[in-house]
Image 1 (cartoon, rainbow, N blue to C red):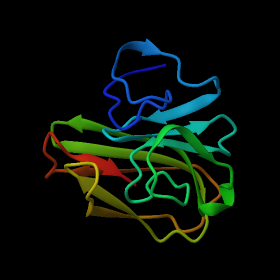
Image 2 (cartoon, rainbow, N blue to C red):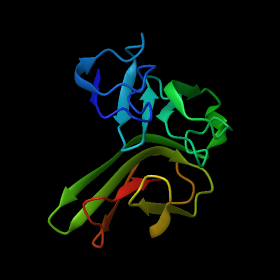
Image 3 (cartoon, one colour):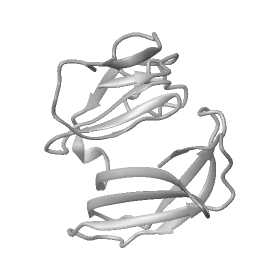
Length: 157
């Protein structure tokens, strides 16, 4: 289910119509994690072998090898594309700033995670770096706090 601003198709319901009440998003009901964004959204299907995205794609942020905006979720079934398996990603405002949290199931040859920041959802700059475990087959939890974020800041990982 989704609702709210949808000017870029970020709800993934096949339209760019703003929704003031919850609407069904597609026909799938196998989502295990969703990261809604200002101009695009990311989702992870159960089994964690499909990473899906919808919305703006000016900088190929949807991961579908195009720069074409999408109004419905497009899914990448090539799980070998990343040397890491993401379990969840979230960002929350806390007293000290914005805390970004992510959990991974395994890493292969990862040296660090670069956190990027944007105030318009299109232009991103590096806000911080977190050293990774490198190679691990166990679940790891990472977090980073942006003490310089303002109310209009958007994040991507």
